[in-house]
Length: 106
Image (cartoon, rainbow, N blue to C red; front, top):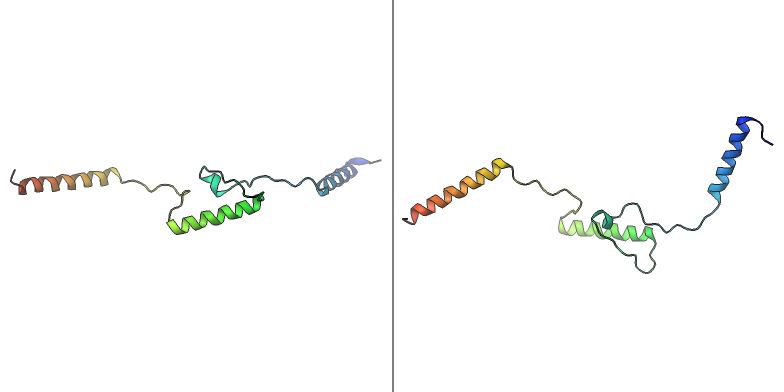
Protein backbone atom coordinates (compact mmCIF):
# COMPACT_ATOMS: atom_id res chain seq x y z
CA UNK A 1 0.00 0.00 0.00
CA UNK A 2 2.56 2.64 1.11
CA UNK A 3 6.16 2.39 0.16
CA UNK A 4 8.84 4.15 2.14
CA UNK A 5 8.95 6.85 4.81
CA UNK A 6 7.88 9.61 2.40
CA UNK A 7 4.54 7.92 1.71
CA UNK A 8 4.10 7.06 5.40
CA UNK A 9 4.49 10.75 6.24
CA UNK A 10 1.88 11.71 3.62
CA UNK A 11 -0.51 9.14 5.08
CA UNK A 12 0.03 10.46 8.61
CA UNK A 13 -0.52 14.06 7.51
CA UNK A 14 -3.75 13.09 5.70
CA UNK A 15 -5.08 11.31 8.78
CA UNK A 16 -4.23 14.29 11.00
CA UNK A 17 -5.83 16.73 8.57
CA UNK A 18 -9.03 14.70 8.40
CA UNK A 19 -9.12 14.37 12.18
CA UNK A 20 -8.80 18.14 12.55
CA UNK A 21 -11.58 18.83 10.07
CA UNK A 22 -14.14 16.53 11.69
CA UNK A 23 -16.39 18.74 13.75
CA UNK A 24 -16.66 17.80 17.37
CA UNK A 25 -19.05 18.85 20.07
CA UNK A 26 -18.86 22.56 20.82
CA UNK A 27 -16.62 23.12 23.78
CA UNK A 28 -18.10 25.17 26.61
CA UNK A 29 -14.92 25.68 28.55
CA UNK A 30 -14.14 28.71 30.62
CA UNK A 31 -11.53 31.08 29.27
CA UNK A 32 -7.98 30.60 30.49
CA UNK A 33 -7.87 34.06 32.10
CA UNK A 34 -10.68 36.10 33.50
CA UNK A 35 -10.64 39.27 35.60
CA UNK A 36 -12.80 37.63 38.27
CA UNK A 37 -10.50 34.62 38.64
CA UNK A 38 -7.42 36.82 38.71
CA UNK A 39 -8.63 38.45 41.95
CA UNK A 40 -9.90 35.23 43.55
CA UNK A 41 -13.58 35.46 42.59
CA UNK A 42 -15.91 33.43 40.41
CA UNK A 43 -18.56 35.04 38.25
CA UNK A 44 -21.45 32.77 37.35
CA UNK A 45 -22.70 33.02 33.77
CA UNK A 46 -26.18 34.48 33.37
CA UNK A 47 -28.89 32.72 31.36
CA UNK A 48 -26.62 30.14 29.69
CA UNK A 49 -24.18 32.86 28.65
CA UNK A 50 -21.34 31.51 26.55
CA UNK A 51 -17.76 31.81 27.88
CA UNK A 52 -16.74 34.42 25.29
CA UNK A 53 -19.60 36.75 26.22
CA UNK A 54 -18.95 36.22 29.93
CA UNK A 55 -15.28 37.10 29.47
CA UNK A 56 -16.26 40.22 27.51
CA UNK A 57 -18.72 41.27 30.24
CA UNK A 58 -16.20 40.59 33.02
CA UNK A 59 -13.53 42.59 31.23
CA UNK A 60 -15.89 45.53 30.64
CA UNK A 61 -17.00 45.50 34.27
CA UNK A 62 -13.43 45.24 35.56
CA UNK A 63 -12.24 48.07 33.33
CA UNK A 64 -15.15 50.30 34.34
CA UNK A 65 -14.59 49.67 38.05
CA UNK A 66 -10.87 50.32 37.69
CA UNK A 67 -11.48 53.57 35.82
CA UNK A 68 -14.18 54.84 38.20
CA UNK A 69 -12.34 54.03 41.43
CA UNK A 70 -8.73 54.44 40.39
CA UNK A 71 -7.99 51.10 42.07
CA UNK A 72 -6.46 48.14 40.24
CA UNK A 73 -6.81 45.00 42.38
CA UNK A 74 -4.12 43.27 40.35
CA UNK A 75 -1.51 45.98 40.94
CA UNK A 76 1.00 45.35 43.72
CA UNK A 77 0.33 47.32 46.89
CA UNK A 78 2.25 50.56 47.27
CA UNK A 79 5.52 50.34 49.14
CA UNK A 80 5.40 51.40 52.75
CA UNK A 81 7.73 53.98 54.25
CA UNK A 82 11.38 53.03 54.58
CA UNK A 83 12.98 52.62 58.00
CA UNK A 84 14.65 56.02 57.53
CA UNK A 85 11.29 57.69 56.76
CA UNK A 86 9.67 56.05 59.78
CA UNK A 87 12.53 57.23 62.02
CA UNK A 88 12.24 60.80 60.72
CA UNK A 89 8.47 60.81 61.34
CA UNK A 90 9.01 59.46 64.84
CA UNK A 91 11.58 62.17 65.57
CA UNK A 92 9.22 64.91 64.34
CA UNK A 93 6.43 63.56 66.54
CA UNK A 94 8.72 63.46 69.58
CA UNK A 95 9.87 67.00 68.87
CA UNK A 96 6.25 68.25 68.68
CA UNK A 97 5.36 66.51 71.94
CA UNK A 98 8.30 68.02 73.81
CA UNK A 99 7.45 71.55 72.57
CA UNK A 100 3.84 71.09 73.64
CA UNK A 101 4.99 69.87 77.05
CA UNK A 102 7.15 72.97 77.56
CA UNK A 103 4.39 75.39 76.45
CA UNK A 104 1.93 73.87 78.87
CA UNK A 105 4.33 74.79 81.68
CA UNK A 106 4.80 71.33 83.01
